Amino acid sequence: MNGIEWVSPAAGWLLVLAAPVVALHFYRGRKRTVEVPCLALWERVLATEVAGSGLRALSNLLPLALCLAALVGLAGAAGAPRPAPAAERPPRSWAILLDTSLSMRARDVENGDRWSEAVARVRALLAALPARDRVLLVSCGTAVRAVGPHPPQTERIASFLAGLAPGGVGAPLERALSIARELLPDLDAAEIVLVSDGAGMSGLDAFLRAPRRWFVCVGSRSDHLGLLGAGVDRRWGSRRGLVFARVRNYGKYPRETLVTIRGGDQGDAVLNSRKVAFPAGAEVDVTLEIPPDAGERLVVELGDPDFFAEDRRAWVALQPFRRPRVLVVAHGAPDPFLASTLSALREALDVEGSGTVTPERYEAARGKGSPGDITVFDGTSPSAPPTSGNYLFLGSEGEHVPVRLSGRVEKPVVWKWGGDAAIFRPIAVDALRIGVARVAQPGAEERALIECPQGALALFGDREELHYAWVGFRLADSNFPLLVAFPLFVKGLFGWFAGRREWAFDECYAVGSPIAPRAALPQGVSEVTVVDESDATRRWRVPVTRRSFEFWGADRPGFYRIEAGRTGWRTGVNLASASESDLAPRRDLAKPPPLPAREPEPGEAGRWSLWLACGAAAALLAEWFVSHRSAG
Image (cartoon, rainbow, N blue to C red; front, side, top):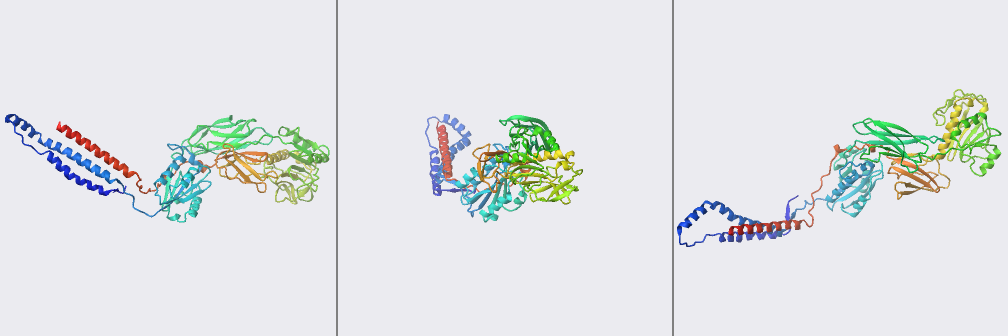
């Protein structure tokens, strides 16, 4: 407070009434002479009065003091006192940066979560600023938004603040400052206040070293377990699968908790669970098997809920189980080694939908639609260039084979194979012997699997909806079927085909990263709709360009569905951020801003006058009580 000012200073003239009050008091208390018939009785009374004359003098002054106090109170009430306003200063500019990352959902504050406390701090700051100041409010999160500069108590700022919610990963301080500088040219001279927990925020120390930079820190705890990632591995044609999860203990002490996988038709059935120990400050990888009836939505969750729920769960989409159909195109019976390999894989194949046809029957079947999920040309070639589907060409050399043939070679020397390719990773073909083979030159969308000095003896390619592998020799002209590498090659290739066909999207993405298809979308799709399955009102229409798109709006964990006409896919979105799960608030750097002196409220003078008037009335009542008692 900067002192007191009087709205009506002329009321001080009422204090001159103190003079007649004092005069009347002493006049009323002067001694009077009374004649009495007997003197002896009054001599004894006078002796008693002389003994108590000091106390009586004081008691006679008490009514006077009460009357004067009442007069002072009435004069003060008439003067209408109030706090003096702060000294006039030039208007200031303020930039308030509010952290809107997911860590602000942590519930480790007294009355709710960090977000509610941060919003309350911002509102308290806005209420304390004078109306002549200007405020720019910036949300500091995955999406940086701003409003202002406006006066601090305007509806625009209040509605903008009410519409914010925490979501996304990271609080990009530098980007928020860059946008603030565009909207507030005098940012270097402004007061910049960051309201955040400081978790996972880079550049905070350098930010606070500059003048007029303030940091309001919210949050108090950091000891919790966080899921940093999850995934699923279910091979083609297999009903069972494995779920992987990575968990980190951010606390100072080891913990043990239950890791559970839920799924099924309703998504809430317990599929598997295991108690796992987590050392202090360590990351632990957990693997759990899922049964055939796992469903399409899997949720990995940690037991013993704590104050931050966003990284206690991981959402993983499991693609529908489906066995592929394999159609072999051959003149007569297929190669016996090929037939034996397909028979060994029958548990993973749609046996009833698979079979062998001649090239003529294949062309007739293709005219009626897709005859199979995987087509194997065993020593034959298509009559027209294939444009979509999955193909394995064994010894095919027709003009419509989708590779660039360059010649023929006898007894080629195998000197290199693609051991780092997903199809060939567990395979070694150093013992391969070939009688005669065709050689091809890999294109930009192709990769060699087996090479000789003259070119590629085997390769695979990927062109939008066309996926294929080509082997430049017939199985009967080599010892390839006699090697362990051959069945592994067929199994790996079929797995790659199945993945390219069914897994159009990853099983899960991280919050803040784009959701994008791994393969080209169907022809004719110009727009997709992305739906947050936990909140049907959160829907986005995303345009498709060149049969692909990127969606950046997945700012909350959960399941999201991508709809393209009658076709739909599901994927999971998880926090999956080690920095965002590190919830330790940076209280060591807290630096709250100095609030300006409070301006007097319009009705404050009336309240002070009322209290003074009530005090004056109390003094008059006390004076009457004391005087009446003395008179009695």
